[in-house]
Length: 32
Image 1 (cartoon, rainbow, N blue to C red):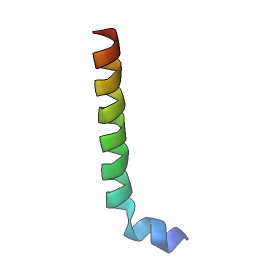
Image 2 (spheres, helix red, strand yellow; image 1 turned 180 degrees about the horizontal axis):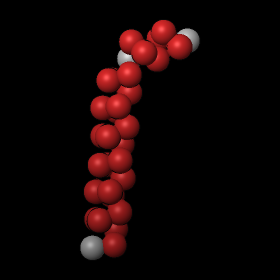
Image 3 (spheres, rainbow, N blue to C red; image 1 turned 180 degrees about the vertical axis):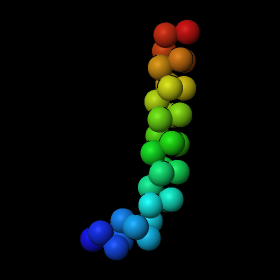
Image 4 (cartoon, helix red, strand yellow; image 1 turned 90 degrees about the vertical axis):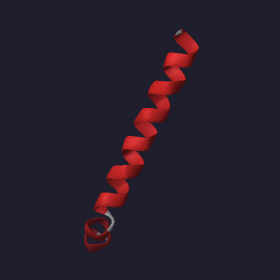
């Protein structure tokens, strides 16, 4: 499991960034 996380660390980081950006865009749209 730890090796798997190490292999996909960059992928997980990209996914987390995309999720954060998507949430920020949703919040901006709702409260604009």
